[in-house]
Length: 280
Image (cartoon, rainbow, N blue to C red; front, side, top):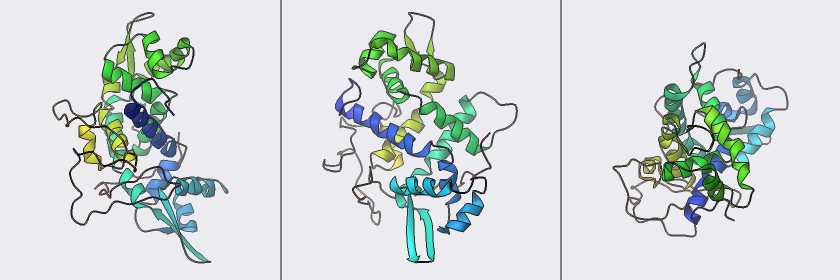
């Protein structure tokens, strides 16, 4: 079902990225994923690494990450259960350093240096604002758009004035610029700088290697335009011709029905982001 008045492929792309953000943005989810970097852990071992979580908080978080296909629960015996990344979850980790790079350049400077994990969490909060992904997509493509025109594209079934609260929030967040009331809106330097992050999230959610982010039709590099092709992830459709064939030895996983996407194996980042303490 369409959520915007954008072309179906673009609408699906935005919906997938929004879904990814909804998986990882809830409090503690990224920290749990980082704590699981390395060999699988028993519940008690993981709990010790995220000791700031109160009793009863870790189990539902793990369940949601397992349901999302990012974490795998392995029952060796009735008394021996471990948790670890799925290949799909491991493939998402290289996106996190991209978020840190963007945050270091564009987030407001704090009174104290922020750990990488806090930069990631603060950045994800900005990206999960209501309608944020759709607004950013439209402004990237259209360059400058009036509020009324933006509303017709982003929320065609709502009263057009409903676009202004999320727009004002994105302006306050520094991702969107305008010269004042009645003036068109456009991406700020920070909003435009999200290209590598949003392109990587789109590639991952579409089941593509992260290096395909450079060829994204909206967020890709201007000098690396791919051949015309739909940016889709439906498993029932053939793979786009512009994607290079799978390398020898590379496996593509077929996820169960409860999983939203499929993904090729991607190497983990060389320097993992540390899973710091509790959020500010």
